[in-house]
Length: 308
Image (cartoon, rainbow, N blue to C red; front, top):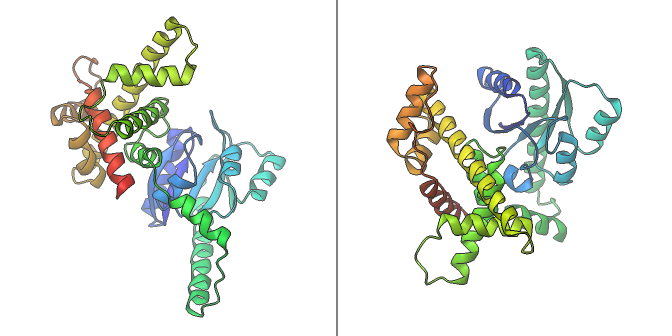
């Protein structure tokens, strides 16, 4: 089983990941500290079987996220909450959630519930396979259309997938990075003969204007450009930390091998790994963040996944 965990408490995400992997219940392929970036496309791209989501989170809580996912969802949902609000839990069930886990986390309860959901998934798959074999599975035109929508790849859906892989899908700067991808893709399509990658200054300026609308004052646009740059830089720094921690735990980790050398200079990755290993914190000047390289690689990789 493939799991995605959404909870603003990092300790809860870590605890659930350990339980799932220690008891061979499956693998956790993504986490987020809020529900704002969780949609059908992300769940489909990452082939998520079970979404474990906290009902109370900042930006967009579990209830709003479950509601936004709608019906005809292939992913099973397990709720998490410390607040025993009967109306809230009832609403979550009505929206399609399967089970409810109370906080603080009880290891045995988590294992038991995940095993039940896993059994349901296997049972549904068996029934599906039998119907398919007997040629009595009835697909309506509506089902085909919904399937096409879910599987349709765009620069944004590919970008969301990559940001999730890089461990920053829930960061504030993730929205800025997605807007940057959208702008670069638009520029490339408007002038396919132009080979130069847009300047970062132009990218930040255009996404700031789009966010604030064209009639915004120059001072407001300047403030937004600076704020956007800071958010993106923090997100990239968080990605560096995420990949370095993966490499520190297992140098042969697939994500570490695939993304670290592409998105960052090896010397910077090594510095961050040493920093984490020694439990020290370097000044920002010691670890150099190459923002243009990161954005350029992110765009090229997103475009590759979109077209692939």
